[in-house]
Amino acid sequence: MCKILTGLGAKVCGYSIPMKDDMISYMRSDVESIEGDVRNLSDLKDAVSSFSPDIAIHMAAQPLVRESYLDPAYTYEVNVMGTVNFMEAFRESKVRSIVNVTTDKVYRNLEQDAGYKEDDIVDGNDPYANSKSCSELVTSTYRRAFFDALGIPVSTCRAGNVIGGGDWAKDRIVPDCVKAAMHNDVIRIRNPSSVRPYQHVLEPVSAYLMVAISQMNDRSLSGSYNVGPNDGDNVTTLQLVEMFAKNWKGVKWESAEEKGAPKESGILKLDSGKIRKMFNWTPKWDTEAAVSKTVEWYRAYAEGKDMEAVTKEQIKGYLS
Image (cartoon, rainbow, N blue to C red; front, side, top):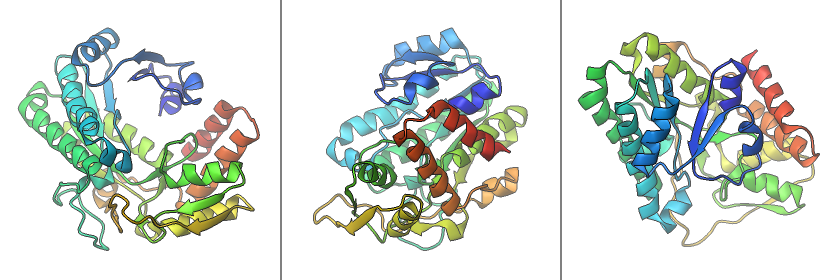
């Protein structure tokens, strides 16, 4: 998102806890970066006041399901009170458009084959999902109680499972595949039959920016939007690993289902009909292409290539 925005000539400021990820070094080369905790309202207000943005996109989160079982209190602090603080900080600003990025997991999961729609019940099952459901409720309340009267459009975007270069998070299938491939290890698949709406990161990023800009010009567009792949591109974890292996030759995998592991949904799909209808938005890359582009990025990283150039080239290819 930072690279797309700066490439378009936008002035960008990021607010985050200190990051160790090696991608951050080049992202910060052309954006203003403020280190801070979203749980600290005073510091967040100061950052918002000093930068005074036109558009605000809330992406700060404790984003891992398994981590939320280990530390639910921290997960709720970041994902719920972090959202409250974000809304408070911008309630007194000159912002013109707000987007809160949540997750496809906000819905009460009924293990159904049909994709969830925006008006389905928001009540996630695990601490991470539920904390994001709470973030949705906080956002809708602030919209009705404050931002509507101020004339500031506010939307939430519920994205499917995002893959793409630069993700090194623990307990995510693509980073697990990459680490195994780079070290000539076997990929261990915890939930091979789980179905998820996988999509390349550039798909939701483009959707978030589209919503943020469009609602700034037409406040009636504010609301909640699912951002996911076409229905045929919802695949199992095993199918995703097979696509990865097709693009990164020589990797091996094995099923490693864990007894007593934290419960995760078996099937999860999104119905993105609303954003398609309202914005004529549609995914550009299917799952095969998303995996191919993702592997392309990580292989370039493993070969020591200029990752800023690789990232910009992928963005250029997507936007064209």
